[in-house]
Image 1: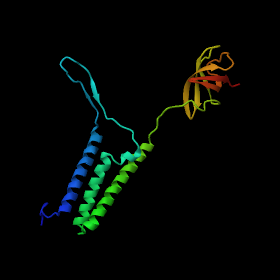
Image 2: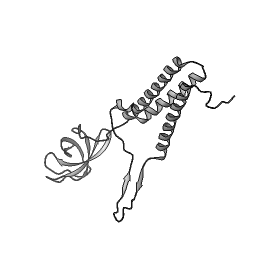
Image 3: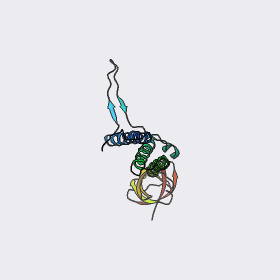
Image 4: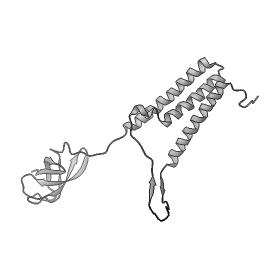
Length: 196
């Protein structure tokens, strides 16, 4: 009963080749992600020394181009081939049913890959802390603010305790441990007043 590939029609062979190529790329990409692609080499260039570091390079692009990625193309080929072969062999449907079904399955795979990329992209954050909204925040003096000089204060801002260079708003000194309120911000230096 096992006829190997000899019992396949030309369309079924095409589906099988697409499924094979897509699966190889998907598996290769998964293996490379698990093993990592970072390499550190120290080449010997005939007396010219140097370190060379080869690392993964991630390029930010518009979400529309993520559909044209290797993952999207591989997923399309894999699902196109598998679903097309299944429709053609198992349900004995002709090319009029198997080809559109395979295309729909491939496009659905690309859509899922796009949604996964979009979901991962939404998790991205710059992590940059800004000084906006500091005026009115409270904290304590960490290093004494001398008269006419700078000290350090710890300020509670956006549910984080942050440390800033500070000057006293009245020009006087404020000792360590005093409760303060921010009255102005100039760059990374805050102007504070003691809370009575």
